[in-house]
Length: 288
Length: 330
Image (cartoon, rainbow over all chains, first blue to last red; front, side):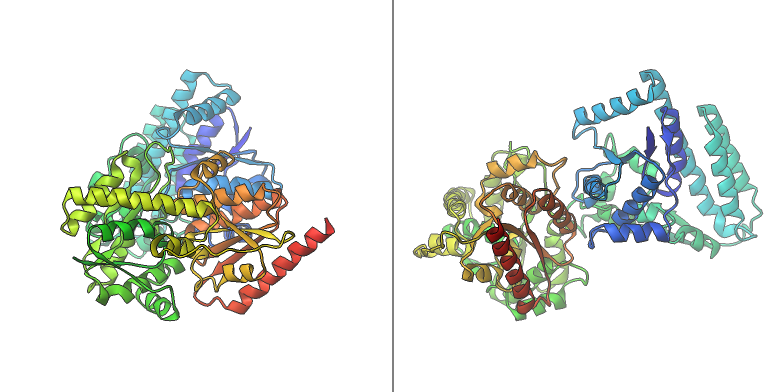
């Protein structure tokens, strides 16, 4: 099957690997562009939020590229994001597109549904259970490695002497990770990527401003949706840290909740959690 | 004895009889704000953060109009009103969840806010313990609160029964709380039937929807709303969807809409949506698509602070004409 997924930052590198190694063909979602947004705005409900519209545009673009299945995540609210896939399915059907959105809900909510979908995706790809688990594990490591390299790049960028060095090197590092196929290769690529970043000529005497970036998960994670704000700030000599990384989010939210502390920090300001769109996390991280 | 303020909007339309009975049984005085007016809306628009939806702005307006008249403001945090064991997992929209905080941070001069968390799915006895907590804030013992809760539940059941019979909330409240006689209405045998779905605070607030229901009533149209359906019927509709939404009032509107779409005696569906309502962006499109698939005429009316009566009237008249034409042709 030709499978695609929503694009969120650099995570597509790991997800592409996942889809290909599950025995499917991968349609890599293009970076959101003006056209993506235009398409999304045209077909999405007027008051839908910007992530919904960008995803709508992305889905239409991957449908043009031949995708048959779009894998995404579900959710249990109260944010609208958990209902995206249902609406996207409705809208794509109405437009007569031959593509289906399949969402993985939280395993804790509906174990049977989750299991059925996992099983289906594995079967259709023709993988054994053992291989499947191995592929998932590698993807996970890849995701973490990508976040590690990206995180470091935001620390180094404000110190770089030649503007743009860090971003170019980051891409080289990401390409290495793109090529890595085993746990050892990923580890090596990660180390190599970090080493390349370290060897960028830089001026350690600078004392960069430090700015924290908080906000709604999608626009924080997708550089094309936030005008490459971290790169922009970095090249202005600002060190940035953001509250959300995809690997960290999944690490925290899928199995057990490790975010109790953040919620308690936000309590004096917003006495209800969770409220959707990372609202509570945003308030909590601001305090911290 | 304390004066407890209840804003005349949002959950008022479904739960006012309950809380009025409860507070009065405890010996307190209930002060309800007047139905929405221009002044209340203006007050709300002034006080509220800029991009809040219109119902939240109106809520702020009602609170502002009550501030000097009450000792306590009743603004519970509605998390879930699904009964324990009902298997519904939905909550309210984020703005409801954060409403007590919004009110507290906006009105620094406000009287103490009773912001008890209402989450009925937690346990069977949850409603009683909520009532005891509310009572204790007002200095009532837990026995008193429990007795009052029992009485209030009874009234609430009667209220729901009246709604199921097709009575509109304002009229049902009059009958239940003031002993008014039910008005008898005659409908011509060949008259139209229209289902009006949407949030209670949008369809039953005649100011904000510029008298939509009255316009229909004057045309001798029989009106149905989702609040006339039992939970059982609504829950059955939930199974038709790939996945339910997360918001209680939205789900009621969607299920109600889906139910009426399949009824042959319903001529058309009107969805009343609030400007800048987050969940409604989904609800409205979903209903629109489903209505097309069910071949049922569908009209969406969006209301905001500038809604003019003539604009809505024109659209309603056109819709009704279209329905009549459609019926004559069939």
